[in-house]
Image (cartoon, rainbow, N blue to C red; front, side, top):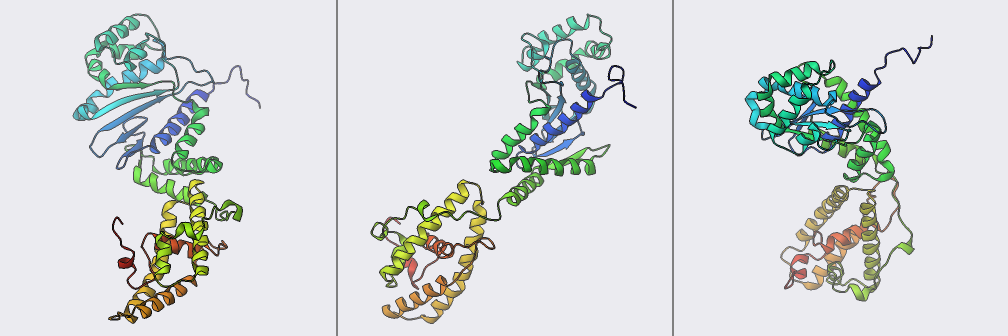
Length: 391
């Protein structure tokens, strides 16, 4: 049987409101500061607890349609939150100095409206007077909320300075776009944003269903969100990485690199010109590739740092063997020969950055980059030899 659309009741508005609450809460979760916790259906639609014990309590109000109505003086989305906040004051009294209340809505605020007066932080007396004037006008829908405002205006007067209204917020259909903006700010690639949002929502909705508690709500910490976002971002980075063509590399001449530390390190062990030219090529190709990967957000800096640390670990054991073999020796020829021996051993190391990634210059080029930073070296006394005034 098909329902008659003219007579059946619809909960589209309520459903839109619930979805909006969850979407806005997710966006807020992604912007938490270190140590903060977000709780859904705890003290409010959602609230944020800070390490300093302050709390940000948020109510969300969503109007359906591409052009939502304005938050007028006769809107239930104005009177109901004000009445609810006033009724909740006894529960908030203990921490009165440590909280603020936010009303987040996709509606606009008409000029000179009560909502606009609240958002503009006008005088409490003026706002109370406007509320009392409106309450004098009969309205069956608003009557119970107006009654609270009139009878408990002194409590409301205390609360008003703590209430902020965020109007014109994105509507439900635009929350995907807003999530995309937040994720781009967290270095997600543009072509992976859609998949990232889908997976992030899946995680959030699943966890929300599992954690929702009648008494305490569902809590999410900033540290947990950070780990989820990092893991998601890492998983979306391509397994295969571009290697780029030779035409994309701007390699300087050996003469232009004579003062570079990685070249000076090689000349300290009497490297041949062919070795030096190969080093320049490997160094600049690898430097360019690493820079492009990071700029295009194909890899993260900490992933390259982990790779470098693994290279240093392999070098360190060989370097310690070198120091043992020349201990007590002052023979310059022997020191250079042993340094060259170490360099050739290290040049034989092939450690792909990713499985099945063929880049023969990447490992040696990365070692030259580390040599430039003096994090590795070839001559037994490379740190002394490379030190000079101004370095």
